[in-house]
Image (cartoon, rainbow, N blue to C red; front, side, top):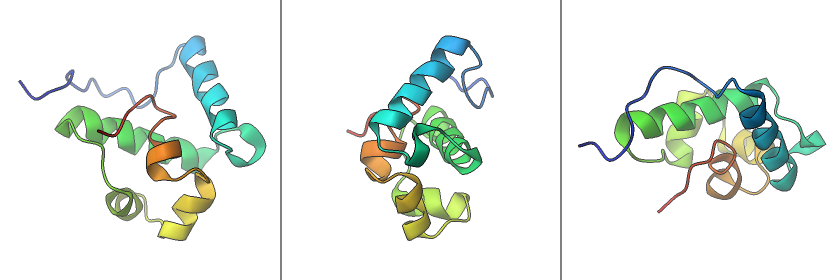
Amino acid sequence: MTGGPAYTGSPLPTCHAAQADAGHRAFEMKIPGGKLGKQHRQVTRFLRRTFYKTGKVPTAAETCEANDLEIRELEALFPDGCHRGAVKIPGLRVR
């Protein structure tokens, strides 16, 4: 067993409740404007996809490399930090 459910290919939950929850988390995590933009969704999709494939949350450096971002751009997108903000929005936890 790989430690997590099999990845089904769905990049983000499509149900209204899951999207509303992500929006609420965005506000709590001090995302500028309290709304997820295109880059936020790209990063959170990557985090979720990687977690379901490997069972591990990728590092900030891996996240930046995969999304063609500089670390300061990631920090600007997620002011609470990668592990405090970016990871919590898609509902993941760092152990």
